[in-house]
Image 1 (cartoon, rainbow, N blue to C red):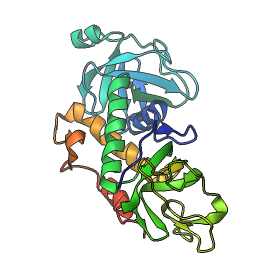
Image 2: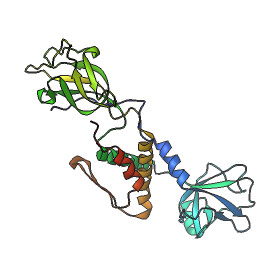
Image 3: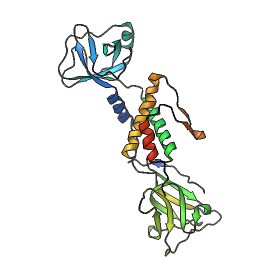
Image 4: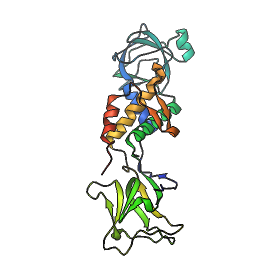
Length: 289
């Protein structure tokens, strides 16, 4: 079988997770409400599951008014005190030196502190790694591409052409002769008819005037939209976010248990990879008949 060549241009309606969406997801997992003691400048956070380290950048928000001395849309830096208590500094150097912002009242409303996410390049790399891992484990692409793929005689069994990728739609199908004769959509079936799309076979109808044909330089060509789906299913999107977040957190835990050598087809499963991700992946590992 000769697999396709072509540009593989992404379809604009399909995407995995954008940088903005990933940052929002990470922020939701690293946010908590807090109260302030204005006499000591100490913030007490509600969550016991978030670790605060001196020098970490954070941003603040409030349903009403932040404590005086603090502003929204401003990056502050943590001065870790103990457990769920911390102070804030205007620069990382001040945080290390222990020079805290002077807070003069407790503000009004509900206040939220969120770890600021500023390492965009790393996050994008984590998204790419998560997508690559999921696609390699499932053997499927969940974002459609437009492409033309080419096939020779060994891909055909009588009337049926077996494809090497998931197919969503056909724009142009040629029969394989040197003239590039096109076959009308009324002359073939896309299979499996009941479960597709995606499709993995094209079968000429018995009453068609066409047949697969080859000449010295001829190849069957299938131009269309390729992929398991135009837009990733919700569970795949969730798996990408969870896995990308897992990879991202390795920068703090210093656990480097991911081995990826895409060109060699090697991706080693990290011991701590979220069970949710593997459970979702398993649903898509069975080939479509």
